[in-house]
Length: 310
Ligand SMILES: NC(=O)c1ccc[n+]([C@@H]2O[C@H](COP(=O)([O-])OP(=O)(O)OC[C@H]3O[C@@H](n4cnc5c(N)ncnc54)[C@H](OP(=O)(O)O)[C@@H]3O)[C@@H](O)[C@H]2O)c1
Image (cartoon, rainbow, N blue to C red; front, side, top):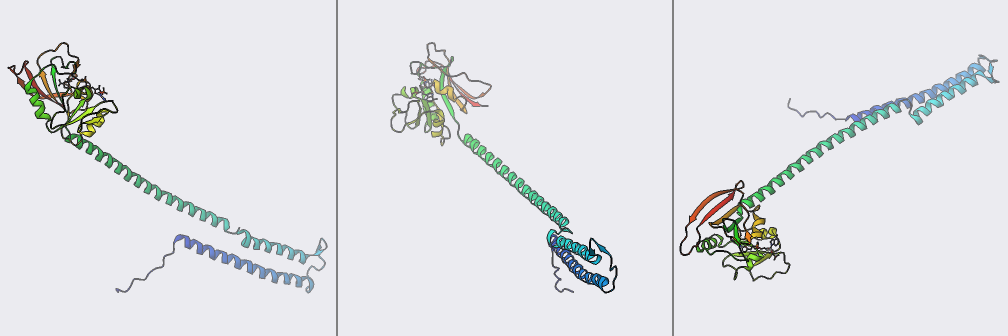
């Protein structure tokens, strides 16, 4: 009851067709053989019928006895039969060939379909992995951006004046203190002219100076770059690099910055030659403000204002 299951030999469709074809060929060849034997017997019979039994003894066609003509005719038939089976296969060859061709075409089609499916699957996987990589890259860029808060720090008059003759127009002690406090320990990015307006590099800050000059010489520790992208790259590890001016550099960094620390000096400075760009309040939102009054150390009233990009 629980004995071994009998294994049934499996023959595929193609093999079965081959067997059927081989059987047909054997039968055809047998028929040729039988035909030959019948022909020989028939020929002997015809000869005997004419010569021994005298059937149609005087009947001739074109000077030949009728049995000779009959044997030649029969021989021609036999030769045709022989050639058909052994040389042209015309009894079944064409049909079989067509069948084989159809099978072959169907098999090729099947293979093409499988390859198509495989190709589509692979294409899908490639597209998926590309989308994944792009998403990952975007995430890394946005993570990096989130980590870095590029901040503009500036003091500007009511008319946006920031300097004259490559120098500041006012001296406000608490503003300088705030500048030092905020930028302490960070990278400070500046234009060549602003850098040259300092008597010496500021302590405890990494200076990045932007210039178009190829061989600009700066003191040790000062990083010199030839464009804004390289300046940002040099400060990429800093969570809050500062853009500290002047006018040209502010203009170029407004679109890149995340934050503005502005000291608005409440006076309009005529005669200034350098200005801060207008702050577009549809882009920048004020988040903090702190008013500072006039006193002995401060000739003008001013307000510390913080803006972040909306
Ligand atoms: N009130 C404030 O808060 C404040 C702050 C900072 C400065 N300031 C004042 O601003 C004034 C200086 O500003 P500024 O506009 O005249 O000069 P700047 O912006 O300090 O420097 C301009 C120089 O930077 C280089 N530069 C600019 N864009 C560049 C780029 N895309 N690629 C390579 N190099 C580039 C060029 O240097 P090269 O000519 O060497 O090629 C250019 O001449 C001064 O009066 C200063 O006191 C005020």
